Amino acid sequence: MGGMSRIEVGILSTADAAGGLVIAGERSGVGKTTVTLALLAALAQKSARVQSFKVGPDYIDPMFHRQATGRPCYNLDPILTSETYVQQCFAHRCHAAEFALVEGVMGLFDGASGRSDVASTAHIARLLNLPVLLVVDCGRLSRSVLAIVHGYRTLDPRVQIAGVVLNRVGSDRHLDLLREALARIDIPILGVLRRQDAIALPDRHLGLVPTAELPQLPEILDRLAHLGHTCFDWPALIPLLQTAPPPRRADPRVCLYPPTPPLLHPSTPSPRIAVAQDAAFSFYYPDNLDLLTALGADLVPWSPLQAKQPPADIDGFYLGGGFPEMFAAELAANQPLRDQLRTLISQGLPTYAECGGLMYLAQTLVDLDGKTWDMVGLLPTAVRMTKRLTLGYRQATAIQTSSVLAVGQTVWGHEFHRSEVDTPPPQPLCQFKRYGAEHPHGVEGWSLHQVHASYLHLHWGGCPQVAASLVAACRRYRTRDCPSSSTRAAKPPAPH
Image (cartoon, rainbow, N blue to C red):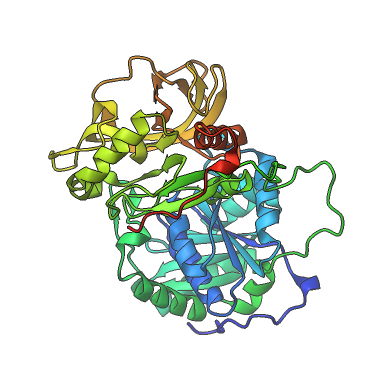
């Protein structure tokens, strides 16, 4: 692209640095993920300290960010957490970073309810006082780009649109028309991607295919890095992307993030929590795992797809969401593991299961092709894939006690699934209502033995007491047969 120079990192002093940059779209599907990954991949080839974030509850886009940067991507969601948590998370994670980039969600001003911009990309940009780079799909317009960009630029004066990226530009003549139109409002064009530059990321029923299932991902990232190097105005972008120096004195009104690990007696054991992490179970917020560690837990990654037995000497399970329906045959074929899990959990091993984890604990799973597969068999229900997408924020109130929730406790979560149980729980765990609704919408969730199983995805930054309760339950399990916690020696996990 003529006029765009290759990335030159480190050309500005710290004093010139901004706090980071938000990538926003004028609507969904305009290419903001492609732009984000191109920038991240190019930056990561020059600096190991590139920190990314994702607006909203999404799990899959952050997986691609992590592959591009080598660092966890953190979600910024004021509904699942709070405005203060969003600010603290961003500041804390940027502390040791050189560059910061936030990928938005939907259109710039599209909020959770559709009636306001709460939890929108614009909301996050205001909270963090960051400039916005607006991605515009120019595939079917020319002069009208002026009206679109002018409208986005003026709708909310609190949101600073620092420039635009013109995506799906068809020809040099097309680009000339777009530039001529935008010259009237003097807005910087900081990137141009041609129509032939499109890089397709494979998707399916719940969005993009996760990174663990893409052996061609390194090649894709290399292509994205090439776009990043050649299609953007780096001298203008660098000062926007550089992180700001930390404040000289911390605000005493601000809580510590992440929470300080508890002061434990030297003899207090560290509970070992087995975290299912493979292609079938991959939906975890990094904050949740960090919080468990901060609370004193030892995390033991393992794979229900590959392991012949659970990890040895564990005190709890964390079964996150993912795509068990895509790997139902493999999960069903591993009967020895399923039998061991059913025995361990039914004997009281604390278990936290979200969405895909709930599906795995059911009696059977009917996949997208209508085939039925045996699962762990702990929950007295079958799970069936449907064509209907259940999606949205939920406020859940516990109507019975589980291993992590007390009766009356309220949490905010997010549902995102195409499956349903065929037998509702006889004693539901939670009553919930949709975001923005005044009245309860339904009930769901299971609490039996020491299992908490729900379709609701929770970000524990908004409910750290859930993580604390899980760690406490696992610690009680570890010391259940011991007069002194020091009498039980830790054992290494079994090979698998």
